[in-house]
Length: 420
Ligand code: EPZ
Image 1: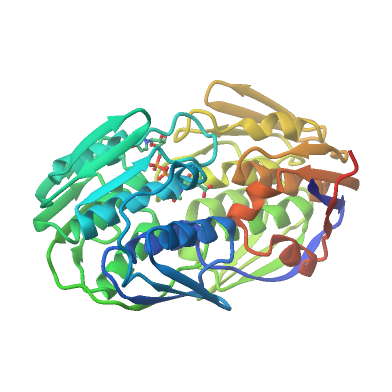
Image 2: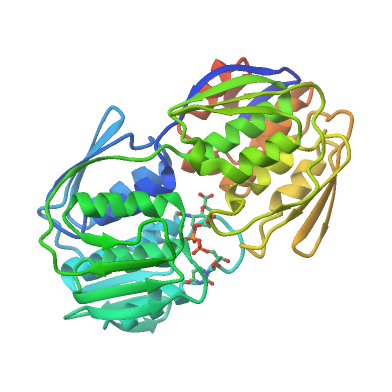
């Protein structure tokens, strides 16, 4: 087993090139299955979840080739409409192939997706929406069989602005006979990126960035080339790391427009933040101040994926910071591990209170989800001495070349085999 050894207690200074967004690249890769063609996806992050999406495409008969920072996907020969449970169970985004397979083949056989253990994470909104488009949905011993000889137009109102359900509707609707109006759609920037890719394929979609999307199905589709948006959650993670450790960083290739509530919280904490055209800089100015209230919400609210990294950044802030997690019912698994560094955190229901401590001590900890593991790295970077973070597999799923980027900022980190 390998672990990330971190000699913490030093500031972070330097520049980080932000990679393409995991949560945009994954639905875009699913979209390549809708129409047989050769697609070149630039700024495609080199992470485990993208590799897994490629494996799913190859299982379905497609071909995927990485060329540096780009992925070339050939789905002309794809014929499969069934995804093995072993692949489905490895990440949440595997469910996005449902809409794409229905659009292409009119049928899909899959199982419930995997993904970070953040609560129940049902897919009822996805399946209900597919049924509204005319698909029959049969659940049988854990397997899901969807048949849709002819997807048709519909008006669908999501009970909750689910990111994945919004994406599945977009993926299926482009091949519908008729017009689909999706109400209470999620507005995350990654959805705008998926829409941009589908429009580049020839799809006719209106309402980008709003909670009502209109898709005029049946437009002729074509292969295309596309550049994935920068990863706002990776950007936020590095900003939180620098805020927690002290120092000054410049994120290049970052889009500050997607980070409003995160930059506001870091400014409230006493950081000097500056947004450029495609850069974001952060400079700390002494000990951070606690942030009174951070409540996660669907975009454009504070992103739930930044709750854990922000909590880690505020572990040594002066005063008490309060978090409220409204999106996932179990997204405080990182708290018990953060306490091992000496953090003072109290969890009551969906809320957490962080009382800033003067210093953190090194610890041996284990991440159990992607963003929670990132929070443990941020805490270890602040603790003078040697810490060990286990659960590398979680980090590998969503952060592209994390160690190299941290070392470029002056951090002393290394992946090594773990003495038992
Ligand atoms: C996407 O997950 C992201 N994953 C998550 O990022 C992110 O945390 C989440 O959106 C919220 O922003 C990808 O894009 C691959 P949801 P998703 O459907 O689509 C409930 C990361 O770290 N719900 O908006 O699964 C659900 O249980 C990951 O990169 C239903 O009840 O999020 C949750 O409580 C973690 N029924 C809430 O809605 C459904 O059918 C939000 O889920 C679907 C969702």
